[in-house]
Length: 386
Image 1 (cartoon, rainbow, N blue to C red):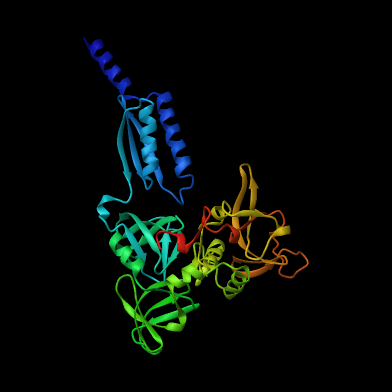
Image 2 (cartoon, helix red, strand yellow; image 1 turned 90 degrees about the vertical axis):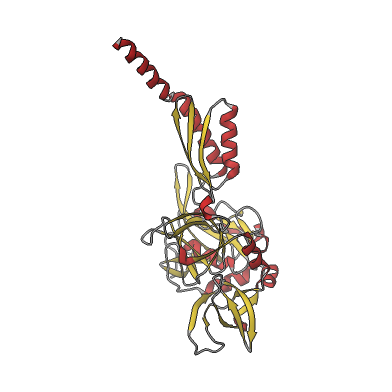
């Protein structure tokens, strides 16, 4: 009798265990879908695991890609796999309809994890529209217009629903075009500041008073800025163009600014943050990291490169070049990049400012000016979030 009971228990146990072959096939499908829809975790979220229980496969995880989940479920179903769906499609339901937001600080810090001690992954400027995907304590997991993902604290953004975003899009928006400024409580230079502002900040104009414009933050705070430091946002996005001479001229303004890992503003910037900041002020949104930027644009060589093209540095690994640094080409073998600080360097070994890491370190160049509105190089005017 005991042997019979043991035999039944053994069969039940074996039935509950996964077949390595079947489990491996499920994992292959998950990996295939992930490679197709979310090849880089910095720009898309597809985190799914599987667990075999009896004759069913339980799928757990989260994604911000409904199409990826749909393909995964269909593919497994077509192959006769019985699934239990425990995959959450973001935004989280608990967010309600307020799953959009506008950056509410001159520069908001976006981190790799929901804590202030975590790595600074990137930054976003005042008035940047972002998608809110989930909440953890006082932190929100967001996606910026360049698709980058990260965590921002609740003070950094003001959440909106779709109606609020449309109201913002239809408002009289202005973009701050000076280098740095202060929004003040009254239309004079001696009144109390409300906030600082940096080049590229976007606000809503609610009135004028003499030479000053009254502007409003996403959270409703108001203050005054000189009208000479602002430009109508719609006029700006429709007319600004990335000309090569202008890009190099603006880049020179940032010489000497401090290097900051994750920095993406005129205050301080890393190498790709410097390039992004320059191009954004010409109405172009580039990918966030150098290793992402290099995937987009028209390949060029140093021989036929033009001012404004991007240089990429790194090393050659087993799976091809690994990009770790980027900068702007200025022409005549001169470059500008953020390394310790924003600096001017030369690729000419006879020059005193020779970039000593250049030999064997440069792995490619890209022309982005002639590739606007292709994958990874999007104009602000054609980005649906703006």
